[in-house]
Amino acid sequence: MGAVYLTDQGKVRLHNEDSGGVFENKHGEKIAVIADGMGGHRAGDIASSMTVEQLHTFWEDKAPFHSPAEAEQWFLDTIHKVNKQLLLYAENHEECKGMGTTFVGALCTSSFCTVAHVGDSRCYLLNESGFSQLTEDHSLVNELVRNGQISKEDAEHHPRKNILLRALGTEKNIEIDVKTVEVEKGDFLLLCSDGLSNKLSDEQLKEVLTSETSIEAKAKSLVDVANELGGEDNITLIIVEFEHESE
Image 1 (spheres, rainbow, N blue to C red):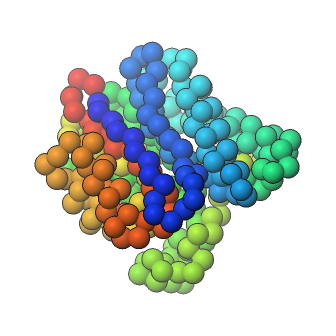
Image 2: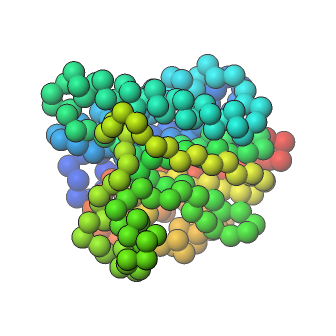
């Protein structure tokens, strides 16, 4: 499978609090990870970079996964460990009090992908059935939509759109959403921070992903469009392309 990771500061923010990467273990399995940090001065960068670094470390020595249930349990156990480390770091570093980060990750094997997330960073799947969002935002505005209090259209410009209901590093008992999907040759996964999903509609994302270009060109195009539309936030994305049936 092919994968590309791209992050951009955007046109407004003074620094980039997003972190991410695509990492391969010794068995050839890949994990794609994005974390969008938040907190006081520079604390957001610390929360997001710690999350990605620790996931990478845990991933390197992981044995092959034989079932979705095994992959899902590994994600749950590992993210809980990362959450504890973030809390401990903030406890011992006054300048990092209140820091936190979103998290979205996709564990990719030869036949399935297990997706885990906390917060409003997203994962989308493009396959023969169409383009769909696999994750559900853990945000105040999305909860209002789910409860029928506001419409999806209202949510796009809601003044409290940035308020999260869940984030790593903010509380001891964190609830993590995990799901597994089957993947086939020709499918694409798109993981991104809200710096991308807040600027481009599902239709725009799909249009770029289905274009006859390389995944590197698709990634650059998505970042360019987000910046053209304002670039108020950091923009981070990963595209995973499932190229071969044997993978």
